[in-house]
Every structure is written in C-alpha cells, then in structure tokens.
Amino acid sequence: MLNVFQKAGLLMLMMGMVACGNSGKEEETYVHDSSLLSIADSSNAIVSDSTTAVADTLHIDTAKLIGKWIQPVQGLDKEMQGFQLKKNGVARSINMYTLVYERWQVLRDTLLLWNHSDGVRDITTIVDTTIIRELTDTSLVLFPVKAAEGYTERYRRSK
Image 1 (cartoon, one colour):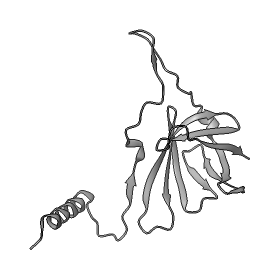
Image 2 (cartoon, rainbow, N blue to C red; image 1 turned 180 degrees about the vertical axis):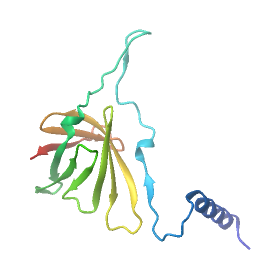
Image 3 (cartoon, rainbow, N blue to C red; image 1 turned 90 degrees about the horizontal axis):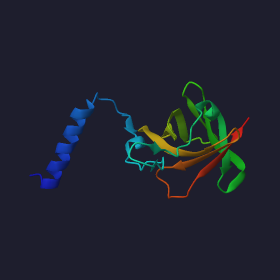
Image 4 (cartoon, helix red, strand yellow; image 1 turned 90 degrees about the vertical axis):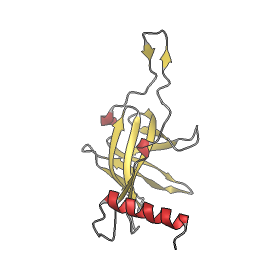
C-alpha cells in the first residue's frame, strides 16, 4: 500500500511525463528562465502630473554592447574572465570553461544572457538577467537582479 506522500509523488511524476511528452531519451533539456521572475521596475519612474510620466531609464545602444567584456577573476587578479557579445545575438564565454554562454538579448535596460553549465549530464539552460547600470565605449556595469542592492559587476572592453 502506498502512503499519501508516495501517491502524490507518483502522481506528480506521471503528470510531468505527460506534460513533457517523455520521448524515452535518457537526457532531457530543462529551461529555467529567470527573466520570468517578478522584478521591481528599474526605471525609477517619476509622475509629475496625471498625464505625464518621466522615466529615468538608461538608453541602451545595443551596438555599444557588441564585443568582448572582461573582468579580473576574483582572487586571481592577473586572470581575466567574461563574455563576448556578437551582432547576431550569439554570446560566448571568455575563460569560463564550465559556464557556456549561448545567446543574448537586450530589453530596454536589461541584458539577458542564456547559458548552461558544461560537463553536467542534464543540460539546464539558465537566463542570467542583469540591469545595465552604465555603458560606455570602454566599460559596462551590470546589476544582477538576484543580487543584493548595491552589488554590481564591472567589466571593461577587451580588444
């Protein structure tokens, strides 16, 4: 006889197999899209009257994002890591061998980076969601939405 928890687990497993259309493959790909998380509006909108709203958002010129962005590896300041953003939406990791960037997209002031961990049997795709706080020809400052307020990641353009 199965107890209540075993029945519930079995039911969830069967529902998952039906929903996923289990094709009998050993490896399955799961997508965790962190961009679907509820995120507070980063625009700091100020309403001056009932008909006009002025948003204090950073205008992102996506052409400025194209290129290689690096930062020192924590604890190994002479080693660099980062990512490359290409015109066609493809992203590549730089000196991060287990974190593999696949593609990127900008939505207003938000940079989305699709990635997965290499060397893991089940490949799980994750979307890193970061707010672009600063973008110049030589520097990029990002705020990961899951980070503590005030935390930023600073990158410099590499040639």
